[in-house]
Length: 273
Image (cartoon, rainbow, N blue to C red; front, side, top):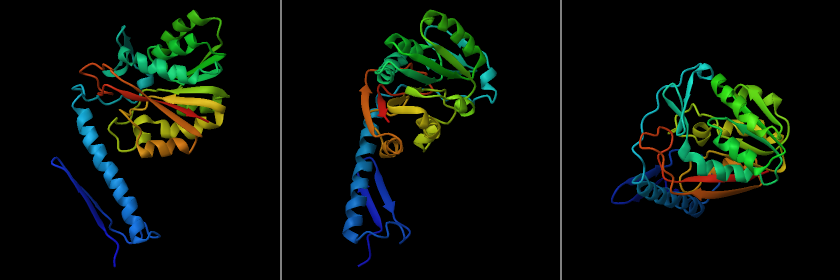
């Protein structure tokens, strides 16, 4: 008897179909093993769709992001107490404070040497320094944000603070060793991208930074996961870290015109090397 090649799930709102087109796909499985594995995945996909529909009812309206200028490191920025804007792009906003605090607490538990990618409005940087750390290094490409950084650092003269000027892709050869890494650059990929690695950019960053994280060190980042972690996201992390802890930050209030996050919760990750 041939293996089953079409699997379906139906609900009043959708029909989900998986069609296996190549006999070489899942070639080593017996028919009952394939059915068990594929049905398990189909059941999960159907439940995810139903849950996503429920979550979407609480989304803010949102707005579409404008195209990012190629020379965005040289662009003028506009600050106020609610947001940092660059050429029509919302780079960071004040509603993120509770996410930033949770991430800062994750990476500063040893009060060691911290690396942050992206300075932004100094929300996360301030939380990191206020936790008490041995040293703080930040990577920042925008020349005008750098000026804000220079003013900010004067408040923390007792802590060694270092600025690496440029994109993280270009300054990774200057990384030393760190006990905590906080990754929250302004992402230039479409936030609706199919790949987790594209929408967060962290997939490209991990191979560069993990060799610089001390054993027992912690990495965190702006996950763009609403109420759980996808399998693909978990697999990506377990390639590099021995344990992964996630925590939901609820009751978030992004503004109705936010163009990079629309949900009222986000998962914060603590990945331990």
